[in-house]
Each structure stands twice: as C-alpha cells, then as structure tokens.
Length: 124
Image (cartoon, rainbow, N blue to C red; front, top):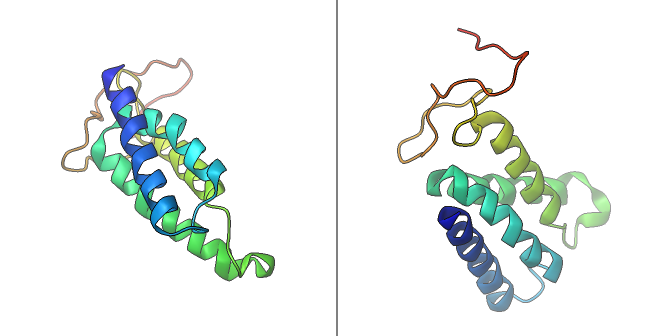
C-alpha cells in the first residue's frame, strides 16, 4: 500500500512539474491519469516506473509521427496507459506470476512467483 501511494505521488509530481515547466506539453487529463497509473507502477517498482516513462514518451512521439492530425501534439495518456497495462501483463504483480519479463536490476518483482491463475502454465 505504501509503495502504491509513493508511486502515485512521484508519478503525479513528475507529470505535474512537466506540465508546469512546459505549458501545452501535457494536458490536465494526462497529469490526472498519472496518479492511478503511478500507483500501479509503484507496486511494480522504481525500475519499471522509469521504463514506463521512457516507453510512453516514445509511444507518444510515434503517435505524432504516424497520425497526421496529431502533428501539433498527441495525447500522452494512451501511451502511458498502454505501457502500464503491458508492464502489468508482462511483469506481473507481487504474488502473481509474470507472463514474460526479464529480471532487471532493481526490479522488485520475482520471476519465480507461484502461478495464481489456473489454466496458465509457465513455459520454459
């Protein structure tokens, strides 16, 4: 619970500071979305939070390049939400087995956690 609260606070602060420092870079919805997603990423660990920040920025830049109507600016929320969901699926949460995830230094999720969902089996 503490890690989720810390994650939410840190992720919100980072997004709020960016929105204040660069007006127009992030919308209010993106900053608000950072709170619940930061809570989820906080549970996964600080390494995964950093991974989410970087990958979400890359996804947002890719949207600007690929979608012509977003040349003047793309929403950051879809990339942030997609990356967070992908990390939860790939890494898992403490006590639930991940689907696919390398063990990164500093990551707090163990790959050898017992499977918590029947019907799934570990490959390899």
